[in-house]
Structures are given as structure tokens and as C-alpha cells.
Length: 356
Image: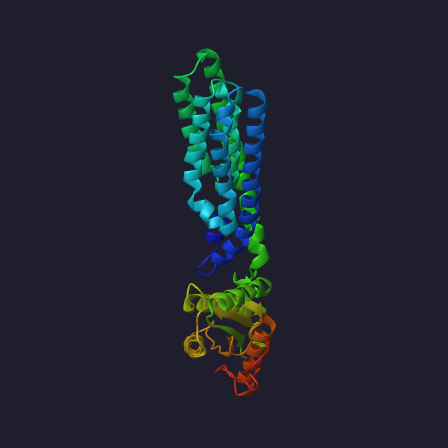
């Protein structure tokens, strides 16, 4: 996520990009989990068919299968858990491969390429840093095992080739993955951000609103939705030009970003309108926050001119319990603020209760 973190004009938090990126990791972790289980089952079947030591099949392989299932089980809960267990998986994978080599005389002589499978997983899932550590430890493990195995000359050559292949994969594949990640993050930025202000666009804001409603319903807390409109913005554009108007919107985006909390979600609604979500915020607290923002905007200088804004607030679940109704209520409050003279904050509107 480096590109997103270093992109200018972003709000101070990156958790919403993580919402989008976590979708990719959820699917990847699910695929990796099933792949690990399938590979262990296949290896166990092949071992049972070609080896005489059946006792090992009933001791070592069931344990490995249970361990392989752990990735899938953790991915069902959260991809963040997989990130936390990255180094544990790394050490555990290498330990199990090492145990397999000691329990089977020619395990690494024939199957030294087994090291490449976890390497590809760590490279694709966690990046070059974790993969490089894996290559270093795996190479040392191969050298260590080398001292205890038969056919030393042949094994040494095989292990050197394996180590060389792992290094080459890490360097070249890591570079490709890095480029792909930059492209993906740039496309992500373009798809969820407004080109002028760098704020979230309204399409992505709608997704965040739906997520916030689900979260608020689950944990039974309230939040506020605010829609803001710049007063007489068309007149400002006609008088001073659209470039001056764009500078006003950019400065307003900065003011809003600096004024809101890290947990809040801010977007450009469209034109001269902005909207934001204030999680875990009552109506009274939302009015206090927005009033402070309104006052700050009215006191700012915009290329030597004064600009004011009107705000409409709707509260979940008091005013509405779904996204569309909540936006309508905030919009109605905004229009009421306009009718009452602009440069003001309005929350309650007639018939504010909405069906879910």
C-alpha cells in the first residue's frame, strides 16, 4: 500500500483502502488455504503408495494436514490474522520440511524442490521481505541437513541448485509483483478517489455508508451523515472563473480533512458538495463538530474572498435505517439550511423518521 500512503491530498487514514485491498487478500487466502491442504493430501497419498514405512503416514502426515488447514481456518476469520502469523507460518513450514527430510532418507535428495512451493506462497502473499527471509533460512536449513545425509556430493549439488532457483525466483518474481502492486494500487486510487480534491468519490462513499450501517446495526451504536454545500458557488465561479472555484474546492477539502477525526469518512458528493460519516457520534455531538467546521470555513480566506457553506445532518438510526433514506434526510436538512438563509447547520427536518 505504499503508493496510497504516499499520495498527496489524502485524508489521514488508509483504512478504507484496506477495505478494498482486503477483498483481494480474502480470496487469495482462501485459495492458498485450499491449495496447501490439497498439496498435503496429494503428497500423503503418493507417499503411502510408494513407501514401505506406513507408520509414518499415520503420524507425520495427519499432523501436517491439520497444520495445513490452519491457514484456511484463519482466513475465514480475517486476513489480518494471516498477516500476524506470517513469520510463524514461515518457521513452521521450514520445520516440517526439515522433519520430513530427517524421517525419510532421500526426501530432500528427490524432493528438494518442495522448498519452492512455500516460497511462492510467501512471495505472493507477504512480499519480497518475508520471501527473502524464507530463502535465507531455507538455504541454511539445506546446508545443515547436508551434514547429516548420505550421498553428500549429489545432495550438495541438488541443494545448491535449489537455493539458486529460490534466489532467482525471489529477485525476478518479486520485481514483477512489485510492479503489479504499484499498478493495482494506482488503479485502486483512481477508482475510489476524486481527481480534483483527492477525497473519496461518492460511488465508494456509498459502499462505506453501507458498511457503516451494517457495523452500527451489529454493535448497536449511532452515527451521523453530513452533507455540505458551498453557498453561492455558481456565482463565485461566474465571477472569478472555474480555476478559482477549483482552488476553493481543494482548500475546502484540506480544511475538512484537518477538521475531522481519523475515524471519520470524507468524500466529494459532487460539484460543490461534500459528505462525511461521523461514526459513533450522536446528533448533538455531530452538530457541535459541524458547527465548528462551518465557523472555520467562514473565517478562512479563499484567494482574498470569503466563502460560506451550509450543512445538513441525518442521524442513524433515529432518522433512517438504510443508506438511501439517510441521504434523503441529510439532503432535506441541507435544503432547509439553504432556505433559512445559508451558512448554517440544520439537523432535524419535518417527518424525520424513516422506515428501514
